[in-house]
Length: 296
Image (tube, rainbow, N blue to C red):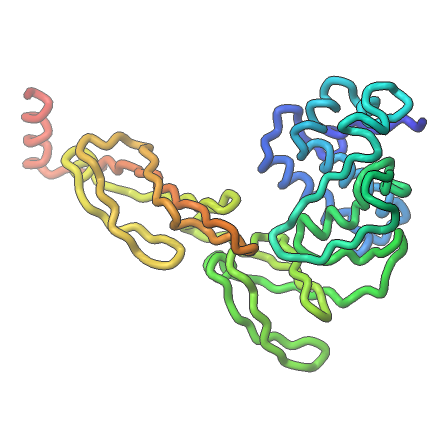
């Protein structure tokens, strides 16, 4: 059996990497080495290696087995799982990307080793398509006729809310609907083409999964005495009650004001981080008031 590289090394992450860090590392590596974009001779083998690493490290049980036994956890000849164990060739892990897709098994019946040339793991091009939302450009282990790929740049709010765009493709103009909730790097599988989405950063909103984060500045007096302030959300402005005695950096959760899942199942929250602004210039009277306050 050929020596395999360490899965953490392949993705460039530490053993303590979070789920978000794994996804980010996978996205970067997969986009770099996908054979549709990278024409180097080693692109396909590296792409398979990247997806195999992600499939293991993103699965809680497989990751635990790998951390304990290394690659032997998935080798039937090692006696640590084999065909009958939870990590052997018979085990299949199915992931769903941010969009609906049609999954086709490439031969074999459930319960048989359907890994083909991928060491008992899922077809790597399936994982890529499921992670990014497109249909696999491979079938039966061979490249199928490929649909053209296009790219589109969206603002943060267009991606979060969903938008209809008129685009020109092969000299023809057509309207396309981008579902609400698409993320940067998502690939949408339309009937006759793939569309890669580039989401431009926003000055106000920051995204983490389906959740949204913003910073809201409030005055010293608002933090001390309490107030009602207006804060932006993806779809509107809402009123937020500031409690008296609010401390700098306090995080307030606005349930259901995050990003809607593009698959239609669930919506995230918005988190407002309150930043207390200390005035840099005070009038004489303001200084007197603060001095009196300090004395009290």
